[in-house]
Image (tube, rainbow, N blue to C red; front, side, top):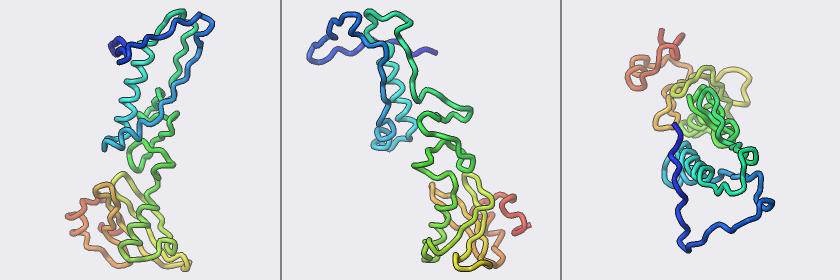
Length: 201
């Protein structure tokens, strides 16, 4: 449904657009939609809300632009950030779908692979040097992960881990070589059975 066109808000000074000759009116105007994410972050809102507000402002500009001297063939509207893929992500602004997290992310802001975050959780739990361990994630989704961890200096050995994402942070539910308390894992973390195959059959 088209957004209702609103007349531009008069400038407090009473200033009006200058009367320009036709040849002085540009045929192409670029609008860089920058700062929407920072605007949302400063207000503790999701980045997507910042982009939505920026989109509103963009349409205010487009729909209330002074059309004097412009004919349809002179008005080109190509907006970076208006493209949306099948997942609802905006590729032109750097977003792509992360299957393991079930959301759109930008790779330079957030890793899709939970490996690094889980390695940090393991290092914090055991007071290990994160540079001394190798973590391999064998199965993961937005909330659960399973894999192995070993000392970098060792070619063999190591142990397995089960991790759960709580309040946007990975928590180690179990790690080691022993048998976990399956009843406790299911009761405290609600770990799905497909993450427990071969462990809690």
